[in-house]
Image 1 (cartoon, each protein chain N blue to C red):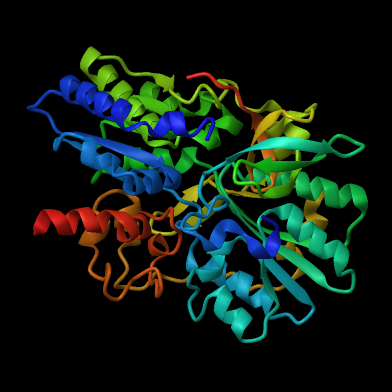
Image 2: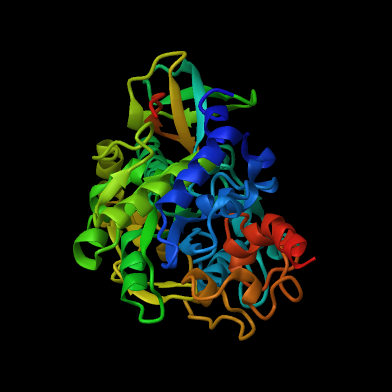
Length: 371
Length: 76
C-alpha cells in the first residue's frame, strides 16, 4: 500500500535498530516520552520497543484524548443524553469511558438515544435528518480533531441549523507537556512529538521544550520506521549535545502547520481558564470552549449538567501511567480488575491508551520473556 | 466509514487517537468544501476539504475525523 508499506520494511527496521544501538552510550539510561496515543499503539502493535537497546526506555505520555477525560465530564454527557429530547453523538471509544455511575454505552442500554459517529459532520447530518430532536455532539480530541468540530459548527451556523450543539472537551497539547516537565517525579531525556497535532499547529508550539527545559523533540510519523528513525534522531541530538525541534514527519507536517485550521479554531473556540485532566489534575488554559460568537451552539449553556468534579476510583493508577511514572503492568488492577472489556481506568478504554495497547499487544512479549 | 459502521469498533480508533488516514479525492461538491474520498481499503467517506482547498479528483489528502488536515506528499 503506497505511503504505508515503505514505512514497515523489516530490513530497514533492523538497520535502524543497529544505528540506534551504535548511537547510545552504554553507560547511560535514556527515557524518551512518546506524547501521542497513536505512537503508543504503533509501538506495541509492531514491537518497536523490542528493537531498542535495554537502556532506551519509552515512556507513554498523555496524548490519548479519551484517557484524559475526567469522570465528571462523562457524567455531564450522560446527564444530557438522558434528556428525552436529545440524541447524543460521540466517537466510538467515548462510549465506554466510565463515568461515576455508568458509561454512555450503559446509558444507551438504559434507553438514552446515544449514537456513535465517525465525524462531527455525521452528527450534523443526524441533526438535519431529525429537526424535531436536539442533537448534541460530545467533542473530544487534541488540535488534530478540534478543526473538524470548528468547521462543522461554522457549517451549522451557515445553514441555520438550530437543533445542533456541542459539549466541547477539546484539549491542547502544550500545557500538559509543560506540567509534565515541571513534575518533580519525572525525568525525561527527549520527546517524540505528536505528528498529526503538529500538522495543524506546526512545529513552533513545541519549541519551548528545548528552549525552556533543554530537551530535544522530534516530530514523528506513526509507522514503525517513522518511530525508529525519530528515536535515532533524538539519540543523535543527545550525543551531539544538540537540543532542538526536528521534524521527521516532513511528508505530512509543514513547519508552520495548517494556517486555515488555526484561523477556523480561533474563530470558533477560546481557551478555558482551566480544565481538569484525568490523573493530571487542573491545568490552566489547557482546553477549549466555544467562543461567544458560537454560544448558541454550546450544549453546556443549552442543557443543565451536574458540572461536578468526581475523584478517580482509588484502585486506578491512570494518573501515574499518564505521567509515565509507572508502566501499565505495574498498576494494581491491570489485567485483573481492569481489562478492555471492563475498564476501570480510561487508559484501558481506548486502543490508544497505554494500558489497552499494552494489554492487547505488549503483554505477550513480556509473557514470553518471563518463560 | 459512515456513522454506524465506524472503524472505532476495531483494534484502533482512528478518530480518538491522533491518527489520520490517507485518502484519494473522487468527487467535489459545487462549493468545493465537501468531497467524496476513498481510502486505500476501498471505503468511501464524505470529507470536509475546506482546510486544504482547492483539491481536485485524484489528489491525496490526510483525513482525520471527517476533515482533510493536509495534502499528502511522498517525501521521506
